[in-house]
Image 1 (tube, chains in turn cyan, blue):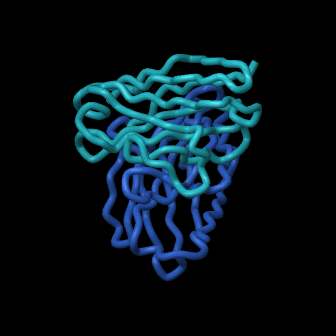
Image 2 (cartoon, chains in turn purple, cyan; image 1 turned 135 degrees about the vertical axis):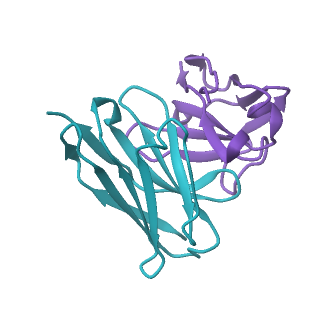
Length: 110
Length: 116
């Protein structure tokens, strides 16, 4: 099972929006509505931001939204803030009951 | 509020066996799947596998031949063993609680370095 494909980097100025894509196959992203997104600051544990494609855990700002179309999932961060600067990873449940992560996207707030 | 605390040897020689344990404090141990996830330096996250309270496991096919997970329900702990380690296994290893098809709660991470 190959890693899901994410752009290496994305950036935006404070207040702007940034969208990160996560492309897989019909064996993972396209086949299940179990895509999740994680924010990872170096040296810390990843933080769950989105689960089941578009649901936000309690405490995650509504500036974070996500969706899926076909084999590609997307995470949008609106109203960028300095603290949003981090690495973001998607993950998907996949065939054979395994999980696969995306390659990761470094978000920079300009 | 659940807390996951992990520990294990941080420096191994090639061919040795990596061993990590994660203790779960708070919350139910039997209602969840418990995962190990790693991140090599400068690289992305990789799911290693998961185990439930009864010991049922699912492993990443790429690591399946070298991975063994176990659970100690009396202590609310679960463990990872990865045999025949090599430099490519150098990574920060995280334990995490699987809730549905995602991981909401994570351990603090353990850096494991494989070097001769």
